[in-house]
Image (tube, rainbow, N blue to C red):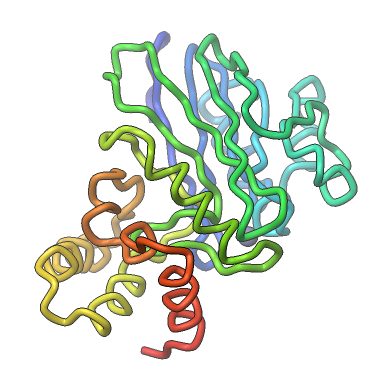
Length: 253
Ligand SMILES: [Zn+2]
């Protein structure tokens, strides 16, 4: 892959069963989001002669931090941004944040948003690009919001997750959702099992199935799509959210 100087890209590296590691590249420098494993990231950066600037961690789960330390051995001056509350679980963090900070990374403004629910200290990173890639904001949201779904509650309460999704819902419609797993198709199958006549869910499932059959990713999605066909984003109360989460946790295809 040829990357021109000045180019701004966000490149996916699908790994393990369904994880996606995101590499955001600008001017031959890179930011890696949630490296589940190290080798494909190191190889890709070296092949493209790109220097690692920093690693963003959304939360402490092994399939998000598993590759970080090995990657740091190759680029020891790279920083690791993670939640202060996770200092014991992500001890190699070099820049601890709590949410609401505005960071400047690769000369771009990145806002840290605290989104507890999947875990107690889960973070999202919102990138407002000022480049010629266009005005679409980019959200690296880890395991909080998925294509047509959301993360399980493994550390936070339903109310926390509902409020976190509300924060994401308040972002502009054209925000691109760069989550950490490719789950969209099965999430839509679940949603259709609840609302078999819903035109938005039906239509999206059709599009997503075509992409998956070709081996393509369905991520990033747009927040506007999630508003239309993601039942968790559509939930109006924390009680409704909680019932949906329970239903999904116990659903089998
Ligand atoms: Zn997780």
